[in-house]
Image (tube, rainbow, N blue to C red; front, side):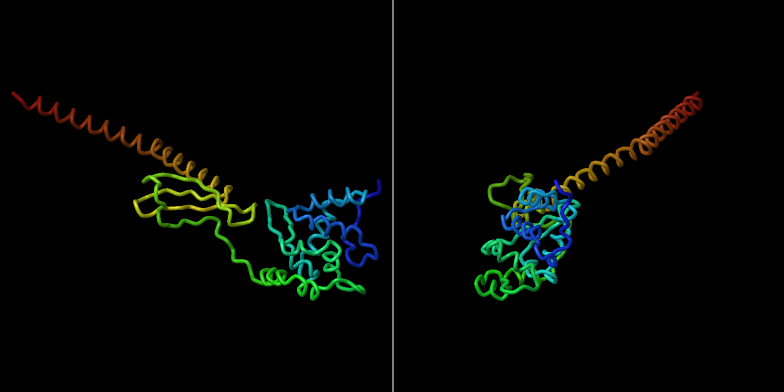
Length: 240
């Protein structure tokens, strides 16, 4: 088997089969990390392709300033790795057309103008890519109208499906009155960290009580008992 394929040559390569196969992997519609793409390209080409090499190609073709196809590639962080996925509207393109959009030059190549004319839905993806993303809070606390039928004081934990799979937050709801519910929405990881922080805070408070307040209470009780004993002894001594 030959050594790892160099994908960094990119679009200057006269026969960029590896870059073409990276695009074909994305056109399956699956959300893929660089190592997943590297495995797919290795299987298709019969040559070993490293995750680092695949990552370089993915970074280039997903950049709208370097590749028209980058307007239609969605990516987000999952832990320390980037996850890439083709926008659903772009799956209407053929793999060959999608690959042509990664090229800046070439006779007879499929252009972005043609793609937008034949698939108007792609324009929404370009508008979406042009809009700056609003940073999402790590967690949020909100008060909302209570749902009918939920008992007072009831607690519910629900998954929210209004974000990409890696960002699905968990919503913890507590009905605090007959009209309102207090909800805390965050990612599962953040919710776990908040719970751990709450447990550690309660434990710290307990240790504080045990280390300071309990001894102080014992000393106060001993002092009070001594004072009462002294008063009683004085009273007995003063009586005839």
